[in-house]
Image 1 (cartoon, helix red, strand yellow):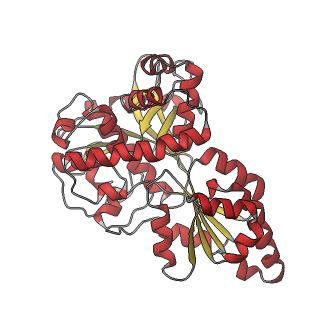
Image 2: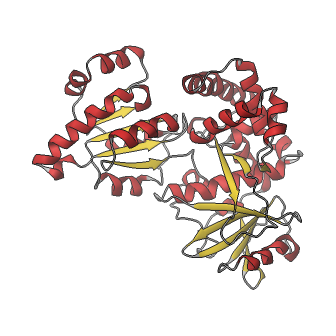
Image 3: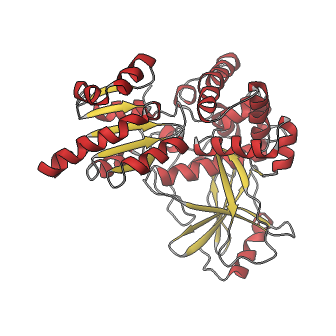
Amino acid sequence: MFVERNIKEAFERVNSFFPIVLVIGARQVGKSTFLRKVAESSRKYVSLDPLDIQKQAREDPRLFLANNPAPVIFDEIQNVPELLPYIKAVVDEVRQTSPEKAKGMFWLTGSQQFHLMKGVSESLAGRVGILNLYGLSNAELDGRKSQPFLPDTPLPSVPAKSPIEVFTRIWRGSYPEIATANPDTNIWSAFFQSYIQTYLMRDVRALTQVADEHKFYDFLRAVAARTGQMLNYSSLARDADISQPTAKSYLSILETSGIVKLLYPYSRNKTRNMVSTPKLHMLDTGLAAFLTGWTSPEVLMNGAMAGAFFESRCVAEILKSYVNAGETPNFYYYRDKDKNEIDLVIERNGKIYPVEFKKAATVSKADVKHFNKLSDLKTPVGTGTLISLYPDSILIKDTVKTIPSFAL
């Protein structure tokens, strides 16, 4: 089942300007499916995953590009970064004679962003437009367009969803193959077990030396168990039985691969009373649920981590609303040493917008009592919002309204 991706308009804008477009993201989020759908039959598709194709590209890159001329899609370009300088040379040659024909010549996809982006910045500077793609958003699953989320943005008209419907999406996660299915527990478990073994383990081996894969799996489980929480490297390393430097290295890989997102405390006009520890979110809550052993939506919804999973899913949805529009958002959270916390702070156009998440169907002013702490930061504060399971949008204070999570 193909789901129309909301990043398409941003992709078309970038493609009309740059000779190369690179779509990056975690494995299995739909990068190649998206590009092949946009291309239809207008360009050749070449996967760089098979070892024999990689060998051909490395041994004679000029011949490889001659046999696979633009316009073309090269999937998983990080497998053959040696191609990048030769792609640059082809683009520059066409640019000299016909700049218009150079636009949109090469479409690339890539995972393992750290090494890939290093090669791109060295080889393709000024020639490549880069877009991030994440798993399917609520809007995409509902078949509706989206725009960058702000609390004062008009809400779309969306049919109400029950709490169990919300948690069914949280439990399934956002990888297209499983998010669009109606999987039983066995299929769901098999998908994520395969994903970890086939993609995550392989990519991590490509990026770093993993001395013990069992410990890396324990590390993944420890990360998933901390979604929606402040990051403590000492505790994380202890639970995985690895050193703190190793824990930091592994987490960096997960972050650059699009598996986790770290939110840092809002730092402009920072006071000495504020903490400096980041907050961790696993971006696919289905993967997190598998790693932490929540075997059904019902069990997850009634479990001890329901609030943390709800928060991580909402953060991921808001993040997708920006990257699908081709924007890089400025996201933070607020916490001071008196433990006053605001789950998300969005900075945009010179204002900050406080956002709180609550896995509950009842709301009150007390849920947003910490929003007034932002006035100490001397930065203009916009409309705030409480995102919850409450099914309607109402004002609970003059400048704070509720938003149902299914409307994100």
